Length: 281
Image 1 (tube, helix red, strand yellow):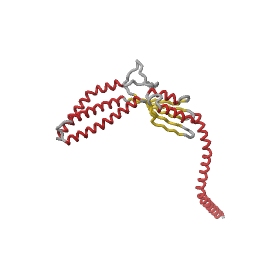
Image 2 (cartoon, rainbow, N blue to C red):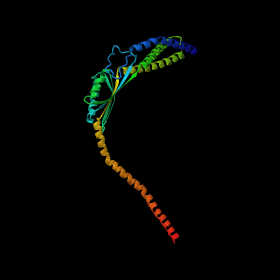
Image 3 (cartoon, rainbow, N blue to C red):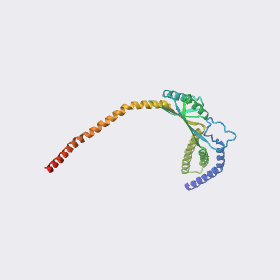
Image 4 (cartoon, helix red, strand yellow):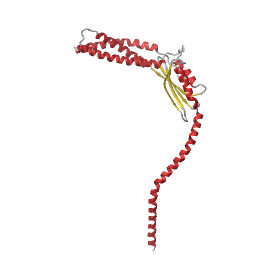
């Protein structure tokens, strides 16, 4: 009976595979029709506006990541970062979520804020972060997810068809307990794979529909230079003390050697002098 069940499962799998192959072209066509045109990376359209009429549709699905470095006086870093964070938390420029945040003080204060926001909110947040200050560096990276999205859609379609087919097969009245257990295990495996594929699809859609922005807040170059000069003056005393300490340690190491070598040298010289006198006499 187990052999007969194996044959039926093989037939069902082959049937699902044929159905998946027939729908492969349709799935690819649907994914390509949903693809958005590639943005001009030289001048990215962070607002996600529609492409110009003469722009070619390259069939890509882009996930954007922005990195913005802002230089401002150290005492204003915390305030500026909190302003950007508050705008994100309140949804002032659209749906937004803070993912990571860090801050350090001392002579070189800095802060980092990472968030995910809808495309329309990228430029307003960048303008808020650099309001009246210097945006010293900005970079944009785009990851094309078109192939990954298409492959995931085809995988989910195949898993769903196989799952539905096995559920129908499970309703048969002539199945033995062993057959039911085998089918149940296979159905559970398919459901786990399908759940993972659906989670991956949700993550892909999140990366495409929103954009990752990382803000690095640092002190101005002039303030950083003054801090370095001040730090050098503060380190002056420590450097002098370290050199003196090194010389003292070196003297402490050499002193026992000198205590042994000096008498030995004196003895050798006296012996040589006595021998010369003896030969001269």
